[in-house]
Length: 186
Image (cartoon, rainbow, N blue to C red; front, side, top):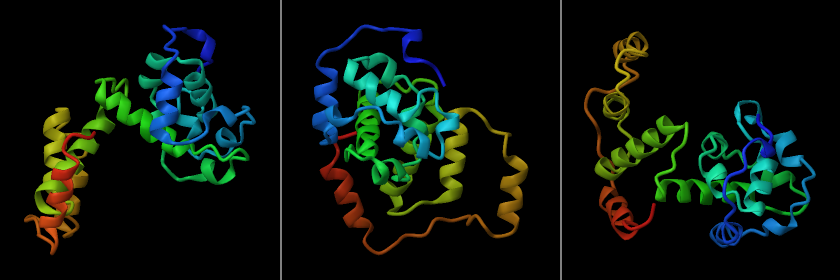
């Protein structure tokens, strides 16, 4: 975890308003009670705590927020949302920040997470559901990390946990239509 004052990047005064609109949540209500950070199950792995991200958004520290690993490590468990006394939907803020980061090409230190996300969506787009083996192979090729989990993958394949061939589901055309309708969105 870092302190916000360690590095001060350029301030973008419109950043807070844009995030507020995208997330449709009252960021101005946050008075830094720390409830979100104290209840976050993955705060130990974040470079900035959730309350620090909210404060940095309020201050307009766009670059620092969008390159933070916190927005990618958020587990979307909704614990912060349920416990916030001011009803600030931090989950929606994190989603908006991820969208902005992807749109601006700011994946930061967590490029593997964004690569996984894109690979997963590609699998669902093609087959209407997740095809684990194909997705894992494609992810390994994209990240160029071919041998890290090889033994575990072989064990899962031998036990029948990974299917060799993908299966289609009913309604895959409807799923493709959803992807087509949202084509321009991140």
